[in-house]
Length: 177
Image 1 (tube, helix red, strand yellow):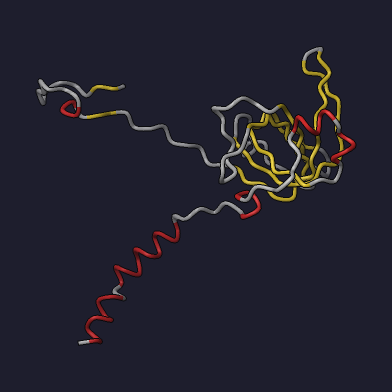
Image 2 (image 1 turned 90 degrees about the horizontal axis):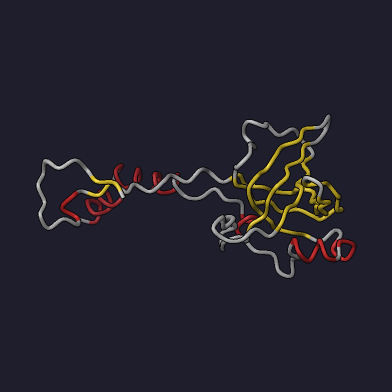
C-alpha cells in the first residue's frame, strides 16, 4: 500500500508541474530585489554630490539613451521610485536623471530607449550636461548589477457580453473597454 502511494505522489505529472513552476519563477537578482539601507536618493546626491561619493545605490527607471565608447558604455536614465521588488514605478513622479556607467559594450538594440531597468552600483561622480539650454547635474554610478525588465503585456479587456449585459444576445460583436 505504501509503495502505491509513493508511486502516485512522485508521478511524472507531479514532477513536470514542479519543474514548470520552478521555470516560471522570477530571475530577478537578489541585489536588485532588496532595498539598500541608508542609500541616498538622486535628489540628495544632486544637492551634495561630494558627500555621497562611493556610496552604494539602487536606482531604476527608463532608458533615455545608450552611448557606447571604445571600452565602456553609458546609459542615460530617467529615474522613478522603486517597488518592493525593485521594479521602477512608472506611474509615480520622476526622481530626476542619472547616468549608469558599464565596463562593457551594451547592445543598443537591447538597451534601447523606453526600456525599464534597475541597477545597483556606487556613485563615482557627477557630470553637468545640458538638457536644451539648462545645465543639469547627472549623478554617475558605476554599475555592479542590473536587471532589464521584460515588457509588460497589456491587460486583455475583452469581456464577454454576458459579463455586464442583462440583455445578452450571443450574436453581438465583442465589446472592448
